Amino acid sequence: MRSQIQRLAIAAGIAVACSAPAVFAADNPMVGGAPMYANKTIVENASTAKNLSTLVAAVKTAGLVDTLSGKGPFTVFAPANEAFEKLPAGTVDTLLKPENKAKLTKLLTYHVVSGTYTSTQLTAAARSHGGTSTLKTVQGEPLTVKLQDGKVWVIDAKGGKASVTTADVMQSNGVVHVVDSVLMPK
Image (tube, rainbow, N blue to C red; front, side):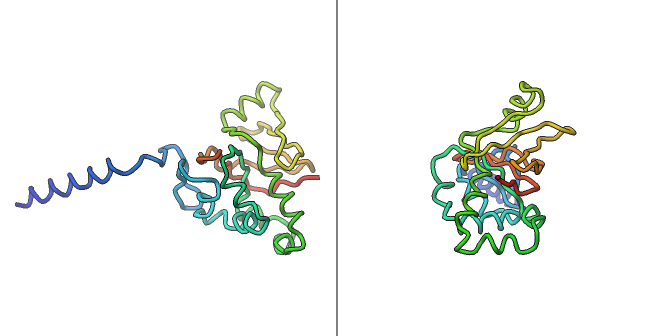
């Protein structure tokens, strides 16, 4: 009787596993303690990542939820909460005020590039151009991708550098690379 129950339990487990859609790629990293699903949008996935809560709040305040939930594809250099904490005291609170929506939108869209660029593609582009390559952001200004110290770095218009800490988080509408600093347009 016991072995029959064990066989039924195993069979039930296999049936559940086989019926579940295979949407979480084994190589798609966890972000902020949450699984990232390749069949969900950038906003859907980011909303579950504890370390992206400041970014999600900013995206909502700027009115960019529909855009980043759209078809895309987009490459997003997503600043983690710690990146926002590096900004001068009060900066985030000021940006989240309704009267600063245009500034916030400019800042956030500076972290977005049209198209899907994986770390392999970013690295290859930089290598083929002597170690750096340039991407045009949705905001309109360029970002520079640089290979240094075995890492992929993103350099903003003011010379600030952000390291890619989690690369290739695949989404249904693009890819996210988590970065450790907020990138600043001119």
